[in-house]
Image (cartoon, rainbow, N blue to C red; front, top):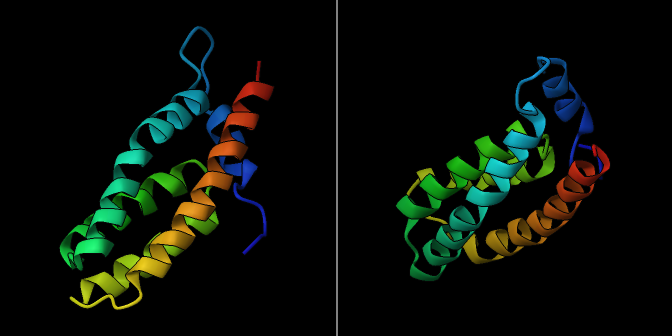
Length: 120
């Protein structure tokens, strides 16, 4: 897995789908991700604090999918790990995993905003 928060080739792939006169697909997907991720992150924190594996499973699943859509491969992989662990009904290290997801989300957020701004 690369050591960068986002795989820009995913965003460039979205740009290839762009049609003249239509809203920017890549920017739209980024905006939706940045607007929806905080709720999933909050749910992860709540789930870890309350040992709620159902909430951890749901929130990590949502964040896994949306992260992949914006090229946040590492974040998506971490969420997938937590999703699989939470699915078992026990997630003893969920707090540590959630903290790592939050840390990586911060890097991802910054990288996406920089990419978005560079597109003009």
